[in-house]
Image (cartoon, rainbow, N blue to C red; front, side, top):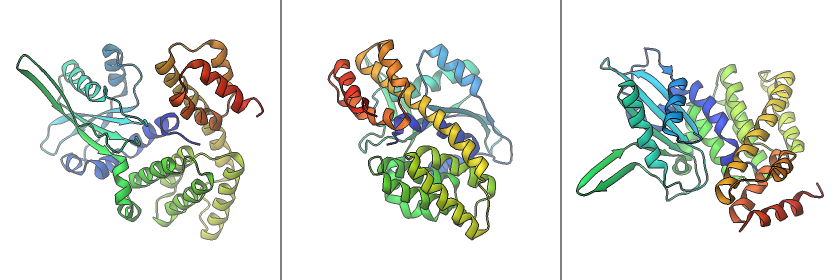
Length: 320
């Protein structure tokens, strides 16, 4: 099944760039209301990459640094950090603090730090970093949107025409259907049909379909069912938005991207638990499909040793 750790990073980055204003409107409406959207905003990826290298923060998730203009005429740099993972990370508040201060110091700009948490831990919602020593206290607060909390606001998401409501629903259902392929198929079709029903433009339908298709991946035979349903629905609605050529090319590209992303994230998780991974085991993992790599994630989290994990790998996939 699809794992939020392994599979959601790349499409989230794409969606943040495509739908930056709707993202803030959904998750951070008070901040969104203070920005002058009549003036162009600018993504500062090179600046953020340099900060990450200098700070030696390791791999970033779906981070974006954006220069915007406020309604009062000032310019402001906004750090959007999307934490795509399934477990608590106690170092996260400190990383947010380091990012904020390094950007402000290096470029002399005020920085607002916003975090979207896409994990499945209901009791983890960090919003501050505090350090105190000898009576000296440092306190840094940042804004947090917990995607899991939107499960209780599902009716609001469904009624919304905000494209980021679709993104939130797809992510939540991808998590909820990790172990039930038939439920995932039904939800995937429901969310795709909703793109047409909400009256999105053709380009938005294609982009949002891209996200849904990526994060709600299914085995090939079920993907074929999805595609046949889409074709039938488009004929019925007379909306031939996603052609066969586009779908085939997209499927090949997504499958390759998913496999590489899943492998990279699995290796990172394994190294975090067990240290360096032997090249022979890495070679074995490279031969696995996306579904097989994602099935291994639970084993990585529960295995007592690298040897036990290797045994599990051999048992589960030797006959496939």
